[in-house]
Image (cartoon, rainbow, N blue to C red; front, side, top):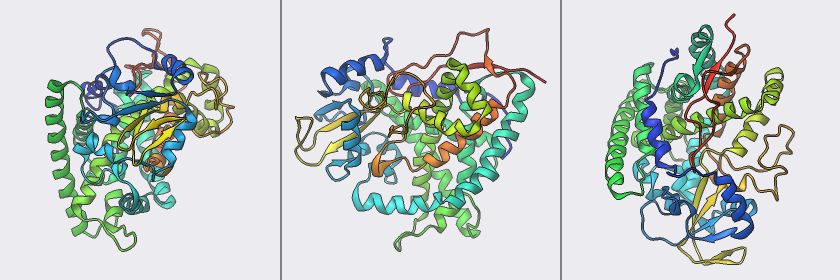
Length: 428
């Protein structure tokens, strides 16, 4: 789908998500995490709640007992064990707005069945088709061609906000309508901002989120019904979902609409921040950016290292199914653990010089896309989108920070990212 490089999706919707998951005071969470790994690796209480940030561990404010976990080994062990640790508590937060098809909130056979149906759409042949026919052309012709003559951009407004949603919009099989794509992106961001700690804010944000979810659902159902009537023979994901079968099960129109509603918020948010954070790391490490520009085979390593340092979703949560313990700390059945992914990814027991961006870092499990059976199902698509967008950026001659603006900085407590990334390059 052709696209113009414009201000794209509403920056205010993006900032609403940022403000929802940030704290009022200026704080470097990694300094705090480093201290907690030493002194309280399994801490009673929810570190997010202490700073007034919505937490997966108790989105619905049920008064659930919560523990925060900071070391890599402990976080990974919880995420690997889907029998001892349940994801059902996620239905209390985003699950309220995303509905029954929210894969992350399912456990056991229901999770396996839904993942099996969705996984069929991410087969290698499908990924190759999407990358070659949709994602790369969108990055190069849709954005690169329009941006190159300008010589400058603000990365979020001109690319990072709109490109991921237009890419997933095209992959999903929506009609070619950029204005509608922008509207869907804003609806997805309003869904993400639905969970709030403050009761008054929660009332307003929840109403917006439910309205956005309902509007999205109605639109997608109509598109799916039309595709089904006309044979659903395309390479797009909605057509593939219509055709998908796993152990004798198929998806109806409502379930497919729910699956699409589940995917759009992640596409509107996670890839945007990951791309912006990656470019901040490159600007802060110009010698590494030069290496990657000259040898694009290094790009997957660079993306993985950027996501290790700055996982967009810095926390995940699980509920204890039975009485258990972590490092000798008793966790009663029903209690939740708030898993600090951002801390685990910088654990000095696993990563040498954990706060430094290193291309030569030995491959070890980082958890930017999750871990275990609930690893993000859209990870291959996100990686393709990131590679296409970054390749387009690195092809801009002399790409560098705009000297007329302050250097970009990654901020926030949970959903971290820069407010702006101003870039210039040589116009030839």
